[in-house]
Amino acid sequence: MKAHRLFGLFLIMTIACYTLMAQDNSSGEVEAILQADRDFARVTADKGLEGWMSFIAHDAVKLSSTGALLKGHGQIRQHDAATMFADPAVTLHWTPTEGGIFEDQQYGYTRGRYELRKKEGDQFVLVGKGTYLTVWRKGEEGKWWVVTDSGLPDQ
Image 1 (cartoon, helix red, strand yellow):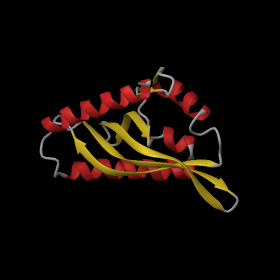
Image 2 (cartoon, rainbow, N blue to C red):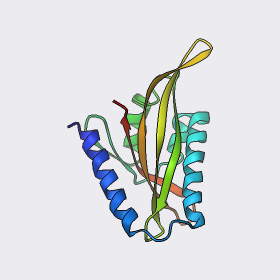
Image 3 (cartoon, rainbow, N blue to C red):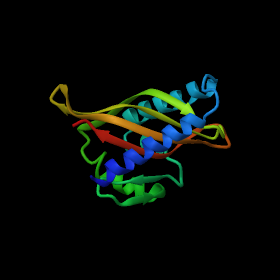
Image 4 (cartoon, rainbow, N blue to C red):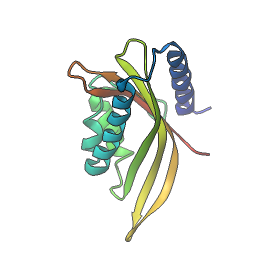
């Protein structure tokens, strides 16, 4: 099994455990984290890598497709610039389908669907899609920051 699939499975299991221990998720915080994810998608669509990085926590971690653990802004920026944002004709779009807040009210998650689209002439062609899971941490200023993000392509 590839490293990113193992990491994805680990994240899903972690989220499931935390979700079982979570407080009532009917609060406005669930909507706030879902809105943060929608804002993250919009800013990334508008500004590319710079928009993407504006939501990544300074101490975020990410597992690359090769299994390397990327730590912090510098490593994540370098990797994502060379992979996800290397081709300006390819754009990443996503929509959260669910979210939750952990018991401590400082961490939460969003899960949803993503698509990679490539501009060919006047049209956008779907080149990939899948499911993602993002773990968030609430900052002192109340902003939700991405601490890790993982996606699994559809088979």
